[in-house]
Length: 183
Image 1 (cartoon, helix red, strand yellow):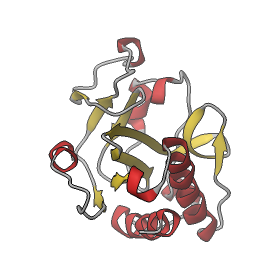
Image 2 (spheres, rainbow, N blue to C red; image 1 turned 180 degrees about the vertical axis):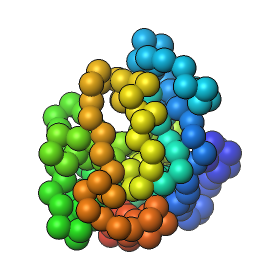
Image 3 (cartoon, helix red, strand yellow; image 1 turned 90 degrees about the horizontal axis):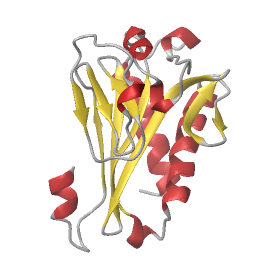
Image 4 (cartoon, one colour; image 1 turned 45 degrees about the vertical axis):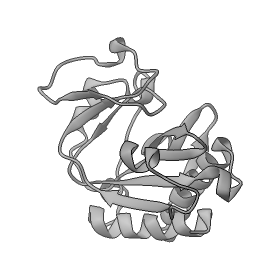
């Protein structure tokens, strides 16, 4: 992502990357060590996105948004809103009501976080993105204050009655993101 963004030109097409990660905690630029509550033997990687600490693991759909915000005429807050709306629309298609919480980026269902996001903007272009909990082991979230919020509940699509695996849910998320950012 960093190399792709650093090597971009004005003609470089925007890209969305869908992936799944092995178990890892990622600590954003604002990350505070006190949000890592205990060691589970899962690596902690310091990264250059915004935000605090989160967990990524098998069964979670992660979409990286490699976008030229300047060319698209988007500000960061607009992009965050559109990413959240893409998740909310995906959830609505599954019969679920997703919502935003003021001051806490991401998407929530009944107060539990189902999708987290963190971005980095450099030279008018963004990278990093959004993670959607689909069908994964949620226990590692108990070893952190997710996104810096003590006691924040997390959920996943499987526990909300959605049978999709991470790839199928990820493809649906890609479709919603493309619609929201007109890609």
